[in-house]
Image 1 (cartoon, rainbow, N blue to C red):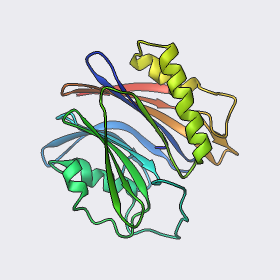
Image 2 (cartoon, rainbow, N blue to C red):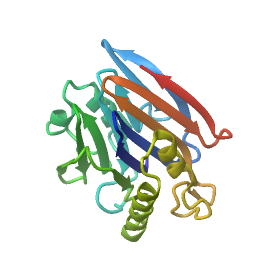
Image 3 (spheres, rainbow, N blue to C red):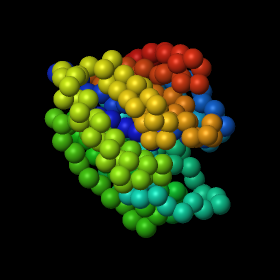
Image 4 (cartoon, one colour):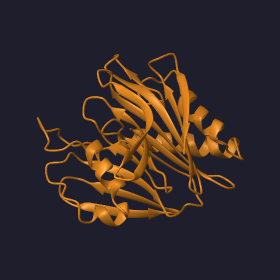
Length: 233
């Protein structure tokens, strides 16, 4: 949940997320869940019960990054996990509008990348106030978590992404997945796939292909011999 890219293709959009997390955080592979008549597709955090990437059958998708603008001082405990907040958002009829009314006191800082009705919006919470920034869906974007990557590292990663996009035009879901998996492989500190002393690692890569209301999720388990599975609705 710590590196996210958005890429517009000829007739679709692609959201890809690398989940950098403590190795003790186990995951249930992506499944389609039906809740109150809404079909949701997501991998589940076994501990907290939430997720970091989710899609709804009408075409909305939300991806979570830890932190807001800069790294924050972590508190001993929080009232609600960020993954659970994400699940509350996706179940709303209008997640972007819902963000303005949702109560976030006692929630750790986060960033949400929301794709809804062909709009791309970045939503942030820094423990003091909320922020909303709309981005062009005709351009590519990349975000890196402020809790794991400092400003210089985030800028470098953006440069790698721009360079890759230029050299590999036209992009495809497969090329984008390769970027998220194979960029700066020897740089285990802030390459796209990290391994910081076997404590914090890139546990998985999840990609959403959004084509009208058809959604396909590709999930690569980096801890299980890079096992790949696809789910769609």
